[in-house]
Amino acid sequence: MIDKLKDNISKFSFLTPSLVALGLVAVFPVIYAVRSSFYSWNLHRPAAREFVGFSNFVKLVTDYTYVNSAGITLLYTAITVGSTMILGFLLALLLREPFKGRNIVRALLTVPMIMTQVVIGLNWRVFMWEPDYGLINWVLRLVGIRGPAWVSSVPYAFIAAAITNIWFMTPLVMIIMDASLASFPQPIEDAAKIDGASYWQRIIYVIIPVLKRTFAFTLLLRITIDFRMFDIVHVLTGGGPARTTQLLSIWVYNQALRVSDMGYSNAGAILMMIIISIICSIIAYFGLIRGGERA
Amino acid sequence: MSNDSKIKTKTPGYSEFKPRLLKYLKFIAIGIAVFIAFFPFLWLLLTAFKSMGDIQSLPPKIIFFPTLDNFRVIMDANFFRYLQNSLILTFSAVSLSMILGVPAAFAISRLKIPFSDGILFFILALRFVPYIVFALPLFLLFVERGWVGTRYGVVMSYILINLPLIIWLMKGFFDEIPKEIDEAAEVDGASRFQIFSRVVIPCAKPGIACVLILAFIFTWNEYLFALILAGRHAQPLTVGLTQFLGGIEYGVRWGALSAWSFSLVFPVVTLSLFVNKYLRRGFTGGGYNK
Image (tube, rainbow over all chains, first blue to last red; front, side, top):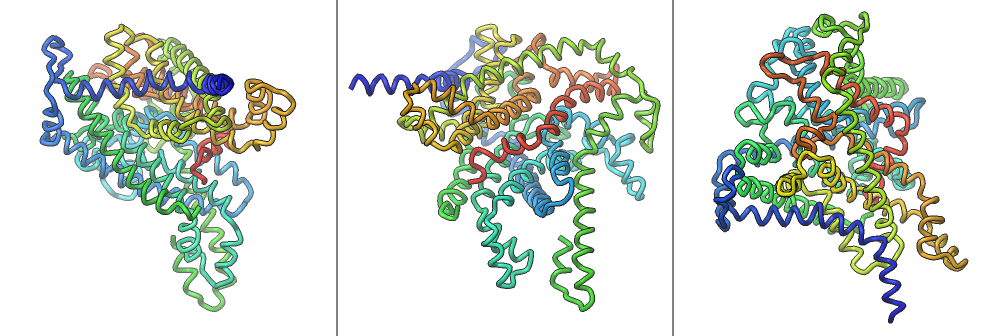
C-alpha cells in the first residue's frame, strides 16, 4: 500500500509541475473569464461592478456588431481553410515523386508559415496591397486593370485578408499532407493501379479515403488557427473598413481595450470558445471517432 | 488540375509525348509555388537595404545601391531594447516550458498514470482554445497584481502557449521509443529518474531538438499576448514593429518597417531553412499522422 503510494508520488512528480502551471495560467484565467462574463464591469468605473446573470450573453446575440463578427469569422475560416486544404494537398501531390532538390523546395515552401504574422500583415499591407505603390496593383496595371484600394474598401479588404492568410497557411497543410503521403502504404495504391484506376481516380477513391483521419486532424488544426486569427488581420486592416474584417478575436480586443467593458468582452470571448468547441466536436465526431477504424 | 483532362483524352501519338509534358508542367507549377512562397521574404531582404527613393520606384528595382540607412533609423527607434526583450522573453519562456513539459510528456507516455487519456485530452483541448479567451482574463488578473508591463507576465502567457504544444509533441516522440529499452534499464536497477534522464532523453534527442525549434519560432513570433500584457517596457520586436505604421505626422515609414521586419524574420527563416527536416517533423508529429 505504502509502496504503491510512493510509486504514485514518484510518477506524479514528473507530471504535477506542468499541471499546476497550466492550472494557473490556463484554467484559472478561463474560470475567471467565465465568472466575469456574468458581471457588468467597466474598467473605468470598477466600483459599479454588479452581477447581471446571462444578460451579457443576451446582449451579445442581439448585438449587430457581434453577430456580424461571428458571421465574418465563419465565412473567413471557411474560405481560408477550404482553399489552404486544397492548395496544400495539391502541392503535396506535386512533391510526391522524388526529384533533384526536393528537400530544398520543401524548405522554401515552408517559409510563409515560419514568418512572423505581424511582419506578414504589415508588409503585405504596405508592399503588396498598397493601392499606388503596391506590387499587386502594379501587376494588375501591367495587364490593364485598375486595382482597388485593397485594405480600405469593401469587399476588397476581406479578400485581401483571406488571400494573405491562404499564403501564410497553405504550407502547413502541405507539410502534413506531404508527410502522410510519404508514409502511404504503396501496395494499396499499386493494387488500384493494376485495376486500371487513373491518377485522379486513385487519389479521390483510394488515397483520400485512407487518409481520412489525417484530413480530419488537419481540418481541425486549420479551423482553430483561423477561427482565432488575430495578428495578421489586426495589423492588415484593423478590422475595418466598416467592420467587414472584424473577426471575433478583434471584436473582443476592441471591445475590451477601447470600450473597457470587461464583463461584456469576456462574455464575447467565452461565446467564441463555445462556438469553436461545437465546430471541433462535430468534426472530431465524424472525422475521427466514427471514421476512426480506417486508420 | 489541368492534367486531369489530358489523362483521360487518349489521342494516339500523344501518349508518348504526354509524360514529358506533364513533367514540365509539374516543374513549372512547383517553380511558381516556390516563387510565391519565397518572394515576400526576398522582397523584404531587398527593401531593407534600399533607399527611400528606390523603395517606391515602380517597376521595382532589383539592382540598386544598397544602404544601411534603414537600419540606422531602427537603431534610433530603440531596436536593441526590443531585441533584448524578445530574446529574454523567448529564452525564458521556452526553457521553462521545456523543463516543465518534457518530464510531463515522459510521464504520460511511459508511466501508467491514472486518467492519462483525460489529461491528454485536456492538453489537446488547450491548444484549440482561442488565445483571446486567455489573454483578456490574464490582463485583468495582472492589472490587479501590477504585473502588466513586466516580463514575468508575458513569460507566463508564453508558457501557456508552449506547454501544451511541448507535452503533446514530446509524448508522440517518446511513444516512438521502444518500451523494451526502459525495461532493460529497469532490470539493471535504474531508478525512474535515471531511466528518464539517461535512457529515454538521449534517445529522444531529435524529437527534443524538433520541439525546441518549434517552440522557439512560435514564441519569437508571438504578438497578441505581448500586445495586451507587455505594457510599454516589456514589448518584444513584434509589438515594436507596429510603430512604423504610422501616425499622421509620419505616414508609413517603409524603409524602417522593412529593416525591422527583416531583422525580426531573418533568424527564424534562416533557422527553418537549415533545420527544415526537424521542423517538418514537428508539424507532422504528435498524431496528425495516425
